View (spheres, rainbow, N blue to C red):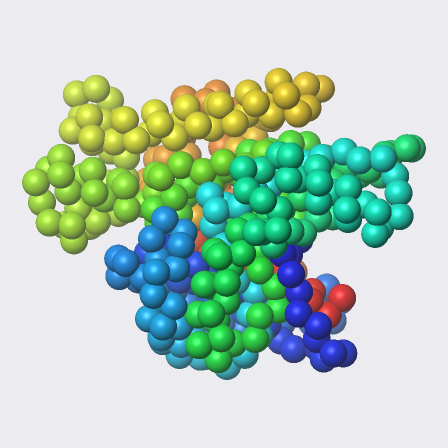
Length: 359
């Protein structure tokens, strides 16, 4: 689902996905081939300095545009030369709701959704970009997924895209793209799952069923949080802390281990948010089904031992999401490359949307 899609005037451009976080950019592009297969064309990531984007808001559109152009030059194996982009805005700046309305004509439904949404978000509806789609049709009513993002947020991102010379195909909330890339296959279509996307500075969560995020939230915990904690706890440089984090992961996570003392408050915060999200879904949205599986994604999911430890703490199956398995890659596609693409789950979901903008 996109917040808006530009009129393509019959054209079918090859677009790419661009994930934008406070401290990093990720780009991904692939092309569809015959018989449901695809070919990855290029991908890459770039770290951002503090102050370009802060708390999900663009502070300096000109510098962001420059960084985007530099990223597209550096993607591998080839620079991305497409001018058509689907980019992300952060979940913590969006309002995602499911509502139920009586069955009616589309124009009438649009008005009903507008007024129903305004009653459920803390901002006037004329100050947001609003998008919606029917997720379930019942005998006399429809269940609707509604997404709204303040215009001032999207307009600053859009300004950066234009300064970078890019044509905007669509805008998506990051967690919606993540859900698409991780739950697009039959294994996840019928049962609710929890998506936990551990990004650079924010973790986005969603409880999803049939690729619909029925509940979303986010917390200011990410890969940088672990590095910062290790730097302060051990009194080492940021670079050394990052090196130790990558080498040892969570460590033994036992009370007599230094890593436990440093990381445990972060992990417990993450666990509490997962459990709260699952409980809300099961108590208030769908009391008939339990969430039994948690899918980790994002760069933070590669932290050694985080899968086993989270599984032990939340007492549920925890797996690393495979964002590329639904793309129809060749059977002999190298596993090491697939693993290197784990942090690109959101960018891949955006690229999937870009590939369907002509549908």
